[in-house]
Image 1 (cartoon, rainbow, N blue to C red):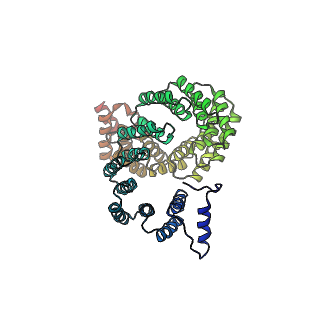
Image 2 (image 1 turned 90 degrees about the horizontal axis):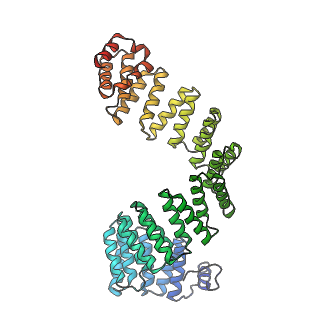
Image 3 (image 1 turned 180 degrees about the vertical axis):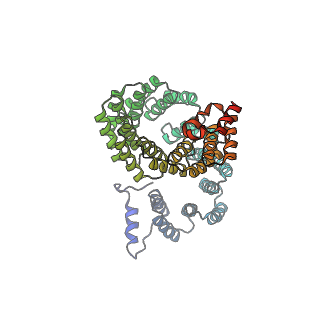
Amino acid sequence: MEYSRDDNKNLPLTKFESMLKTNHVLFFDSEEFENIIHHYLNQGKIALAKKAIKLGLGQHPTSINLRLFKVEIYVFEDKLIEADDLLNELYGLDPTNEELFIQKANIYSKKDEHLKAIEVLKHALELTDDAIDLYSLIGMEYLFLDNFEEAKAYFMKCLESDLEDYSALYNVIYCFEFLNQNEDAISYLNMFLDKNPYCEVAWHQLGKQYFILKDYRKALTAFDFAIISDDTFVGAYLERGKVLEQLKRYEDAIENYNITLKLDDPTSFALLRIGSCYEKLDNEDLALQYFDRTVHEDPLLDKGWIAITKFYNKKKNYQKALYYINKAINIDSENVIYWKLYSQINQRLNFYEEAERGFKKTLELGNYELNTWLSRGDLLIKLGEPEAAIYNFEQAIEFYPENAEIEYRLAGLYFLINENDKGTFHLKNGLRYNQEYTFIIDELFPKVSNRVLVKNLLKANL
């Protein structure tokens, strides 16, 4: 039993908490202690749970259930040796107690010994008449092992015993999705709905499977049934809005997203999608209004800042785009997408030093796309920093060996600083890898392209 503050049966809990404030020790039977401890553990109040265990064992030192709570605390605190020792002691007293095996499995799981945990839990199945919790625990252990087929089978067993075990239903669908078995997921959900036709969660999950398969008409029907089953189901309205967007029914999508704003606190996702729909309807004022609300609602949502920045980018209002991307970077300076946009916008404004700084930061954050290396190197060439450009491209070639675009750039740079042997080496590499990129020499290094040595090398190899 779990206590509630509004429950008249919580007298033992009130009595216990009153006792803690005084020096008077009151008596509780062992079951009352168990309920008090269970309440505190569910509330995450570990210190109070430990006090209750200590006092409980003081009054009922032979209680196996109270000592099992002590094991649970040991496991929680990663005192696995102490937990194991106490479990072994309790096993000698009550070898058929299924909770002993559950806690033993918990210890194995903490040690990442998931197969042993499964073995112990399967033994516990032989000792119980109520297997649902054990099926769920076994399913979770199989998930830890990435054995999604076995995990799926055990979560299905949970649903065979309890059709309203939505946690198990979500886990079953998660396994189907991970295995890319969307058609099988649809078949399973349809069978489930035959038994439980008003389950909004199952209709919602069915709609998501159809959405993945881009069967938007069936997805829409599934979300309709989810809403019929529960007309306050926010998730169904959000997913229905996404489907309507795919069908280019933007006004209907906005209507669904707006319903979610009335049913619950505004979500940045809904606000962003409304803004995007208005943008597609060419209603720029309302699009901007909702993009602005998105970033105010959740300043950490990068999609909001990206949407408003790209909006101004499309309008070629680069100053405004730069203003918003700078605000985004001030909030999260480790976001690679922000820095890429920052660089692109600065490039369009001919702020080459800032653009180069942005690409450099992008690389430092681990974005090693070829275009990032090329863009940064080209900017360094434009800024008259050939040595820095060479270093950039030498790094790039480690990630993209035998790349003609890099080789021609290195060739041009080495010729530019009169290191002709290295220039020749890289030019021959470029010609060997792809002759179609020779225009790079003309475009980026016009002075170099007129040199006799370069012209002769090109002629000899073309």
